[in-house]
Length: 394
Image 1 (cartoon, rainbow, N blue to C red):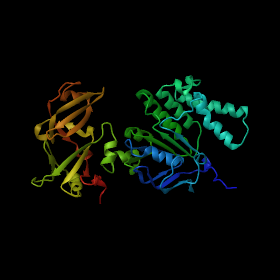
Image 2: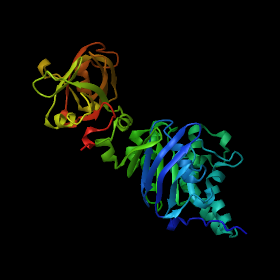
Image 3: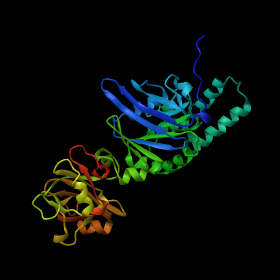
């Protein structure tokens, strides 16, 4: 009789270590992906649609096999293990609910399955405990009143919460949440983000929270991993990834609105180090001047967040000139889109009084000339050729 690998015990699982995972279908989906998930941590994995996030989740859960690379749970090879033996709690982006089971039965199914696998007979005390655990999770997700319904009787957001409840109801060796709150309304998303983060951070095993929303990733992860075109671009704390994005791919993903990326060319004729384009001329401070000198050519990309663009009080203070393209008030703050004279679109973010100076409410001030000043202490420079943050280069 062939011996089957033993299931990894959640209490002994330790961390998850993936090294050089590669996977191709008709084209390469993952390329040399390496990640560590530490015991008890929440790692937020973010990236645009098609980056390979769900494929990575399926490999970790055992639903796909990598073409190459290694995967270890608690220092032990996990690749020979079946999905059931890995003891991964996976919330599918597609929900994958049992259509013939009620909300309560769907949610409780991992607890029942674990009991069956243990070989122990069911008893009233165990059933009561399972029921109480299930009801507590459904209360957290505000769907306890739907417990008797079948999936066909639920809305898309309700189905998503049932799938989430089923993943949360017990602790395994690894929890994977694939876009767990993406289809919920904004108010509930905001509420659940903090409550879910608090709940899963109490687990002894690691958790992987997958989201295409870079801001959500920053708010829920102990660390954030950015995946783009099947490659890990950067892994770090939320503060590290936000303040020092490794390249333009990371910078584009994080922020709402995202960082402005403005292609500029070094002005060789200027008396001081200067970057320019039609409608913009930036005399560099010492820090940015040193970074610009690291570029492979005479072109760089200025990275500046919307809240680091100020309205210039006088024309001689302005470093960028353009006109208002759009004005979006959001209560306490507003986002003003400016089209520079060279055609480049940038977004500036500020208080409502600041926005009023530019043109007031929606539809007002469109086409009005505007002058902007850049806070250089908040600016980054990226290499135009390879898109790397020049602050990371030696």
